[in-house]
Image (cartoon, rainbow, N blue to C red; front, side):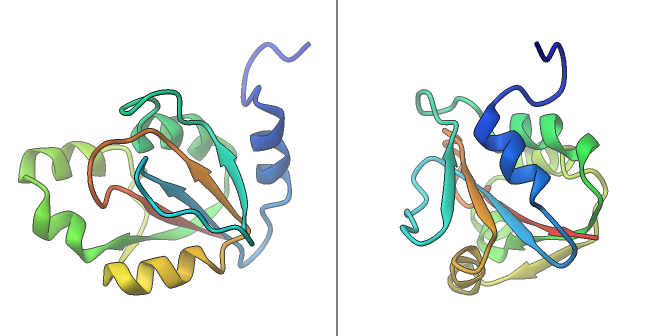
Length: 129
């Protein structure tokens, strides 16, 4: 029995297949679905889990070179929330892109981790090392 680390079997499998130059998207609750991309649905209720909670759980297990964030996150979300979320980004180099471009990149990801996060535009795309 696994006593620590990622205990969700589907999520552990996705992370094990996350290789060089792959991306994984961690998306908020209302984010659109992508039928052709493997999706691990962790959402329980709106607000749980958050993108930050998922990042805190998986970042220690990954070799990453950076992340993508939608420009609308900083433009449309209050500064205190943005600052709080950035504390969970692990200091990764971040590329800011338009939300429409962000959605295109999600469609190219190895997988999507769907959260219940209610903060608009809080989704991130992680880039492997």
